[in-house]
Image (cartoon, rainbow, N blue to C red):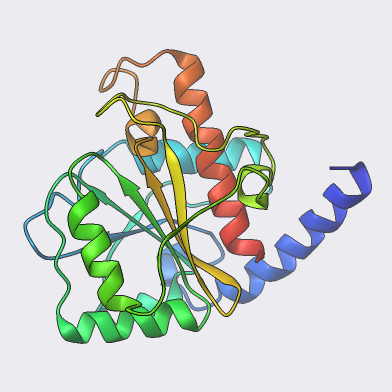
Length: 226
């Protein structure tokens, strides 16, 4: 990306952020934060406690986004659910949405919202089942390595980085597109959230942690500018 393009992107982002973040709650006013999705079914939606604060810190230090230091926990039926342009979900266990939540999540995603689902090992089967209920006529598709989400700020020519080994599978970025708009990103077999965790939680090499943080920054930047 050229210097001119970088400048245009920063100006556009500042304008966009001033519009999108206006309706967030007072303690988050004027700042971007990551809204972590609370869901039913018994899965540990709250896992990787240090991950999101670490990612927000990385964003504040490296990207022209004014980010809050804490994430926000949000349920689909909360009144302010639509106030957050980027929703993150993770976990190891079962995910289950009610019929009403399905309808509301579909509305959120088709009216400008973005969902990043990050497989923390064990949520794959239930996530695929529930997202199919949200979009019964749209399939998850593999995102090509050439897609901008892998090149927004940091370059990932081979797609998602492999942070943790689970089933010895290649990491895959999957997505759902509604009328050509990218609305759901599913990072599978990568475990970005574990890579965002503090080093005393997961003793990953610094190189792996940095890869995970950079990819997280790319996803957020993409979600806010497209």
